[in-house]
Length: 474
Image (cartoon, rainbow, N blue to C red; front, side):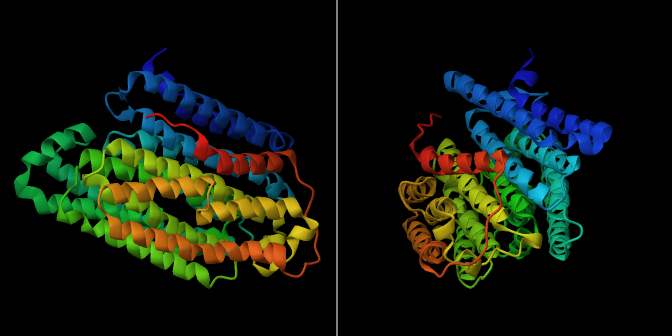
C-alpha cells in the first residue's frame, strides 16, 4: 500500500465515515438514525487505530514523512495532535447520542458534520503547504459554525452561530491576508521552500513580519486569545453541551499544532519580536480567570476558563526560540489531550443534567446533587480537580510540562504568573464541588443513561486519571 494511504489512514477513515453517514441518512432517513452514531464511532476508532500504528512506526524511525508531493507532513508528534482531535470527536459523539434523543433533534448530518470538521482538523495538522493549510482551516471552520447553530429553534443557539460565524469569517480573512503577504515574499506556498527562501529576503523583512502578525491575529480568534476572545463565552454557552465540548477542545488542538509549526519550523521566529507572545499569554490567563469568577452559568465559567487554559498553553509557545521544538510540541500536545478529557467530561455531564434549552446549568442547579446522584458529583469533582491542576490528575501533569518548559528556558516570571493563575482558578472550580457536596439538595431527577453516555463518561474519567502516568516516547 502507498504511503499516502497508510500514513493518512485516519484522514481517509474519517472522510469515508462522513460520506457513509450522509448516504445512510439519505437512503434510510429516520430508520437509519439509530445506527448512524455508532457507524461514526467505528470510523473514529479505525482512525485512532491508524494513528497509534503511525505513532509506533515513527518510534522506530524517528523521522518525518512527506506525502502528496510535499503538501502534507506527518511525524511522531503530529500523531499526538491527531489523537487529541479524534478523542474530542469521539467524546462529542458519545455525549450527543442521548442528548439528541432527549431533545428530539437526531439527524444524520449532525454526525457527518462532526466527522467532516475532524477531517479538516487532521488536514490542518498535517499540512505542509499554504493552500492545503487553508483548505483544512475552512473545512474545520465552516462545519463548526453550523454545529454551533444546530438547534435552529433556540434563540441562544442562533446567537451562538452568528457570534461564531462573524468573528470566524473576519479571522479567516485576516489569515488569508497574512498568507498573501508570505506568498508575495517567498513566491511559493510550500513550507519547506518558504523556510529556505525567507532568510534571503532581507529587503522585505517588515512585510514578512506584518504577514506573520496577521496570521497570529487570525489564530488568536481561533484559539480565543485575549483580546480576540469575546465571542467564546456566548458561543460555548449557546451551543448544545456536546458541541461546546467539541469546539472548546478540538479546535484548540488543531490550531495550536499549526501555529507551532508556523512559528517554529516555517518562520523560525526569534528575537525581540517574540515579546508579543508573553503579553498575549499573560492577558489571556488573567482575563480568562477573572471573568470566570463572576459567572452564574457553569457553561460560561467553563468558556472563560477555556480562555485561561489557552494562556497556559501559550507559555510553551513563548519558548519557541530557545527550547527544542519537539519539547514544545509534546508539552502542548499533552496539555491539550488532557484538557480534552476533562473539559469534554464536564460538558458531557452538563448535557446529561440539562433539560429543555439547557436551563439547568447554574451553580444553584448543582446544589446537593451528591446526595441523590453521588456518581455524577464524584465524576464532576474529578474533572474540576483536574481543570484546577490538582495531582494526580491529567491537568496537573499538563501544567507541569508547560510550566517546567518555561522555567527551564528562563521565563521564571511567566511561570510564576501561570502558577498564580492556576491557584486563582481553583476558586471557581472548587465552588462547583462545594455546591454539589455541601449545599441544600435540589428536588429533581436525572434521566436514565444510555450506554453511549456511560462509555463517554468512563473514557473521560479514565483519561483524566490515567494519561499522566502513560509513558510517551518522542
